[in-house]
Image (cartoon, rainbow, N blue to C red; front, side, top):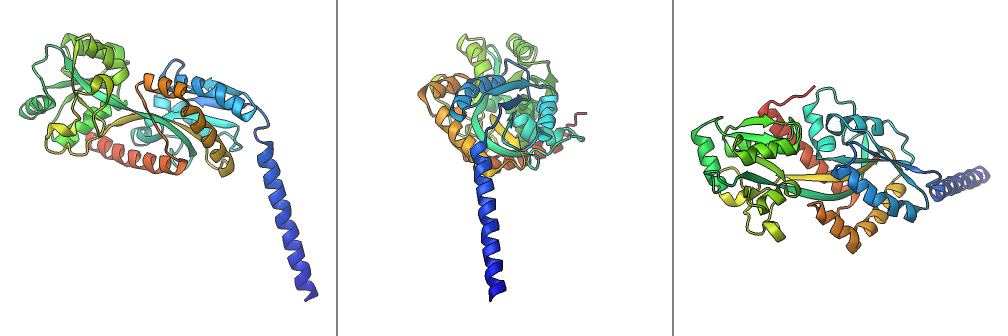
Length: 330
């Protein structure tokens, strides 16, 4: 009995010590500035969000967030660096649909796993895209476009900001689901692509509501459909969803670009939960709601666990599309 009592006492002491150490380590966090790596160049949506959130988050945590931009290969370059960072709560990554859902199927030698290498912290929001044609295009509805594509396989051309971008894959998903064939015309960015759509050199394009919105309002582009599950509000209320076209295979069609915050895999759950809670408070302020909506995004309130489920579904969806379209990038 004496040995058993000593064993129990020792076990309790060890457990108490571990709890004390854990509580101390969590209480000490953050112990230095937090590195917020943005996997895209400065000036883009991912970078803008980082700068909007960082100052307020740093104040809430009693530290400074240092933003570092490492763009390249659709977010793969920066994501690879972040995946190797210590999982101590002092390293964060701004990622997107490209870096954390699409690239795993596009790049055969991707040096990180979007699920295994990271822990989701927060989904800032989603951004539906809109299918547009020139104002003088003969296609008045999405059904018109699909009917022409069905009758003339490969003759209708669709522009995008580049191979493997969400605009490109939205086009491929529509072709896959609608059983038609388009000719993809990649550009180096949205600006030159949308100019050629307006001039009629390319038949159509998917792009964000932010980029396409001004041209729709000016009368240079006609919006045929939005890729959200439900119609949008404000300036896009009259634009039907892709599913509303009634074209076979488009039921449940949905494409949203998205922006999220990740930490290296293994980051303590208590730290992830604290980060999530503080960012949620920041995002829910009227000021931040207006700023995010101004970027064309719909703010999210998903938990980290819900973000992970959402991310896995996105990976599966785009893997199917990329395989069907036989898209590979080196």
